[in-house]
Image (cartoon, rainbow, N blue to C red):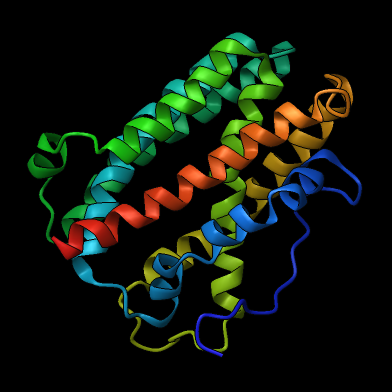
Length: 236
């Protein structure tokens, strides 16, 4: 059935752990995000080019604030080991911004255009929400706000790869699918989910579940809006 959810399996998070509880508690928002029409368009290759180009530019701008959120995670980190890990993440994201600019050039978007484009309302609302949760709370609050991005993209790739309607040959978006479906990224996503589980144990996740779930749900909703802005721009 067109648009239906493909059958797929994931090992993100431990059974009974905080990550899976958060994901299950906002199942509708998570489905709207991870199987958004934008994602389905990536899968079958029908996504309008204008929508993807808008997404690529805003994703670059998002990455800048993602690095800032990771810097906040260094400050909020619960141990020196976590501080080292988050510092390495900042360096990786900043390197990714350079790769992202080259990727944009491959889609006919010069660096000057990317840098000159203002942040959209969707980019501002999402990135500032994540940083606000980190400023207002502790490391667990921040990591829960970040998880829908890191883990969600891994899940999006798995859903696409399991999609029987996927266009496997000649799909213009195959390079994007390959990047997030690769084992290197899947390992990163699994680690992010495992960190939520571990912080849930050490930072009272069960006692704070209602608030953490609200954060996770809102971040998932904002992720869906991030996809949608591409369609909105293409329609103009």
